[in-house]
Amino acid sequence: MRKTVVFLVGAAAVLGMAAPAFAHEEINPKQFPTGTPTFFTLSAANEKKLDLTKVSIAAPNGVNFGSTTRSPTGWTVNAGDTQITWTGGAVKPDDFDQWGYEIEGADQPGTLTYKVTLGFSDGSSDDVNVQTTAVAPGTTATTEAKSGGGSAARTRANIALALGAVALVAAVVALVSGRRRTGTPVGEKQDW
Image (cartoon, rainbow, N blue to C red):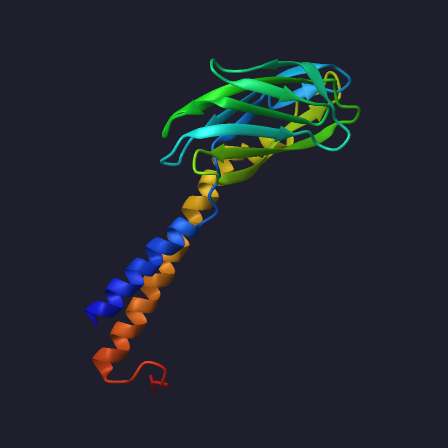
């Protein structure tokens, strides 16, 4: 019985860690007017135990990067119309930094999804999609505001998923425990 409980608690921990891991990358401003060149700041947190040494961002379809970028001290930039890569610096574990870039503007209102690739000192990388919203001039409502906020909603979803996994494990433990007390082998039908 004790081994089963230990196994199930371990399984719950693994399920909790396997919940969608949302990185802490964001682009500001979160919304901007269409038809206007806009300067953005990309913030990236290093949640690994090794240095973050490369950051790349790919423009959404139909959007071109402008000529202005910002690099933290020690970083260099290689900028093109649809891809920007910063290298040469290092963000230590449990720290973050910010990079800046300009876009020429978005023609239509809607959500723009940037692909951000974080490269680490061991050669591994993580891809993250980060969104901003283009709005018609004079418009202030965003999908994110209506839905209660992007990162807050993700955090609530992760907590709900973890609690659901714990509840599932508790139910299985109760089922196994109840069957063992009644002498019914696990897997056989019990007459209630």
